[in-house]
Image (cartoon, rainbow, N blue to C red):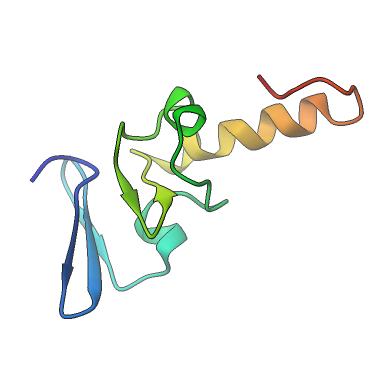
Length: 84
């Protein structure tokens, strides 16, 4: 298995990382993606595993990378600018 791989066994998703596997939690927790950011090129630009998804949502190596898009959105709120 590679980091970011997802295996479904008997209806339960198992998400693999460098040293651990997450299973049994919410999709957000398993994916280390607290905002449930969908898998996309933009998500990958913030550090999501390239091409990896679980339930349509991006899989991140850590929750810190998954919160970066929200910091950009809040920073640019009200300016009319795109977060990127």
